Image 1 (cartoon, helix red, strand yellow):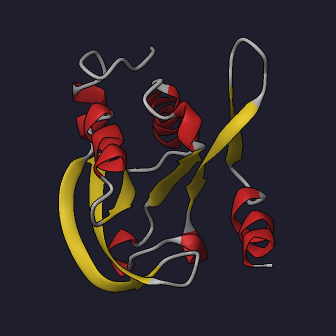
Image 2 (cartoon, one colour; image 1 turned 135 degrees about the vertical axis):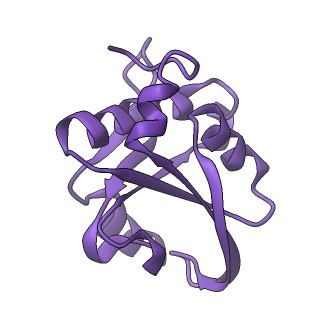
Image 3 (cartoon, rainbow, N blue to C red; image 1 turned 90 degrees about the vertical axis):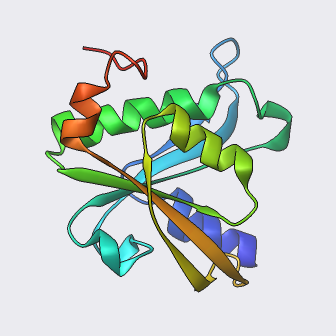
Length: 144
């Protein structure tokens, strides 16, 4: 029932997209943009947040960094956001690596946050501004 609730509330939200294998079209994860009430930290205010998930067999194939780059482009070019946030739970070095690859910079840590599955965790937040994204677009592989 908890998983079904996560699917209904998170994976079916506006600006949430399937991550699919190019060869087969098989969905293997999701990535999305959250704003307003869906944000995970009060620090984010009027900015957006990117979240993502991918099945373990597909880790390390570059699918999530590619999806995050596309979402950042949408945030800054189409949605007019001035900054975008991304968070990872303590110990999730793979997620932190995705954010590093996409140009996010560490901002702050919050302890005692409740995850979507209901457990209490330490969450680290990273941020990229529109200006940083524009300056680093070649370095991080963004499209014109």
